Length: 258
Ligand code: LHQ
Image (tube, rainbow, N blue to C red; front, side):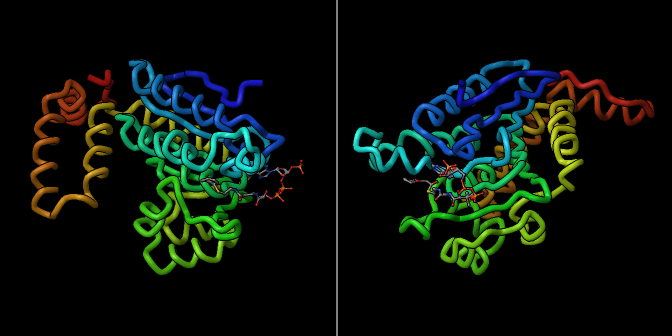
């Protein structure tokens, strides 16, 4: 059974973590396969948006703990440098929006992969756990970067240190995720976000992502300069011209991603 399912439809590449018996915990094979699927999403012109979810009842329980206990496993020196750090970097550098559709529990690296996505949504029954402290580790996979930026220092450090289960409702309330939906509406609502993003001007979304990637690094003045440079590029696209023309002609725009 493939640990990652992948298919493309209507401009959306759907990536499904597929080790449901292990709550979609990551082993090396799954971590490397996810990286290659993210590379495919970056290179395929027909992919306008990436949608990541989990098979079965979980999103992902993070690292497969039986693999790290295995003497023949990849070892601590490889797990971050070869598994999670490239995954997080690839998601942030992918010039396309990435939606995390958190269908169930998201723990450890599983939670932090969701939090680094451009839009993270959850089912009402889903939950988020910074499970690291419970096993004597620190939050990784970008957790110490994204969590304080999303929810503020105080809540981030409490979430990280206590390792408690955070409900989807609290995740939305604290700003950890964009929205949660009732379980029976979740799949349709989450997928609709991906379809909507796939139809919007692709270059403008890529430039927006690039600007956000730099907003915590740049000074205020540098960020204004970056916005100016990216807006010059956006204004040279077909989609910009079409968007303005359609507005003035009182019709729906037809974007082509160029
Ligand atoms: C699992 C796992 C799992 C294997 C459930 N592995 N089997 C980076 C650096 C280097 C090393 C370490 O890792 C990292 C990054 C990280 O992600 S560290 C954090 C690793 N993850 C965790 O510590 C979470 C461990 N799991 C749990 O706490 C619970 O399973 C949660 C709260 C996620 C779900 O609880 P339940 O809904 O009660 O499910 P369960 O515990 O009964 O699990 C169902 C099955 O899945 C069970 O197997 P079994 O054969 O008994 O049915 C679990 O053993 C297996 N499973 N998580 N991470």
